[in-house]
Image (cartoon, rainbow, N blue to C red; front, side, top):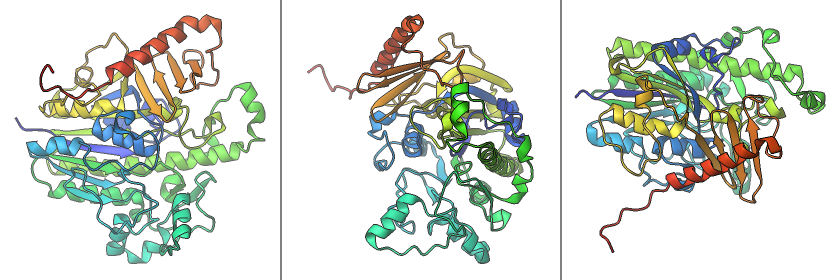
Length: 468
């Protein structure tokens, strides 16, 4: 068989609803909306951890964070963990990651030192936009050195602490006058439009696509729409900030919103920058898809668009991501297109699925056996239009807590015995915990039981060599 190519468009911090096709009337994503129409749109895909490093490790290993021992930030992925490129390599695949990978902490390392390969044949790693002397800055230095001073989005706080503790000199210029603040509002990118981090990922990915021979795996690791929201004016100009919709808040939260600093102006500014960053990615994805067409690779290339987690974007009067993993943070886009695979194109799958299901799905699509240590389930039947009567569930886990998302509820359990339950049918933004409401006693019990079943099913004991 001619094995399919795989192109994964992996954004950072993109909510499920940060796509026009997913019901957002404000955001402009014509390329990704078209990709959804040409493929399959999973409407309820959930990641396994609400922050970058554990989520990414889980996604590319097909294992839950707890099985990797990585349930919080700052834990390097061991180099002997089997990842997707390891599994594809014996079948002739050449694998590449361009841009963000984030298998290692970035604040405490010298980015000029070669990065562990993790099974990839080709790496151009840049986990932050312009803050370190990495592959991104090296690329700009080679094509437009006069633009280097405008690249950095600011030194991450952890890196600043590391530099001061070790007496290291920060040699990278940071054009903004303030120390890096992720949520102070939206800023126009001060350098040229064609040297943003997003442009770097797109350009180097196109270069890989133009040169690769034989089946390939290529991950385009976009940093956007992760804050700070610094984006070329070209994409900011797509939007009228004052016409954007504000998030809805329950009355008791609305009453304290402005006093907490979540003013209309700040919420609108954040949405403006966030949406513009997604639109920039969308435009460059169009270039990537055209590169596939130009080389005659589009028909037999599986294209996947997904993200490592979402963004509060002001909901619950919060920014960023993390506990307790509400849909704003845990629910991400998942689009899959493969013309040669005869998928149920244009179809929207409503069943609950998990990000770690993607890896076994890709193996099955490529005609490769799925190893028993993988903890996800192939989505190929759903891609071909099958119906799943079970509706499924998704588990997210971090230090001291686990949460289970079903079609109608989210259940949260802590290691000290506390628990919460949200009824998503009446409270889709998850503001009101109903675990203490007697009317939900049966639902609470059912979700405790379901979580226990999930924990048992995810066990992967080592194989025995004989009876005893």
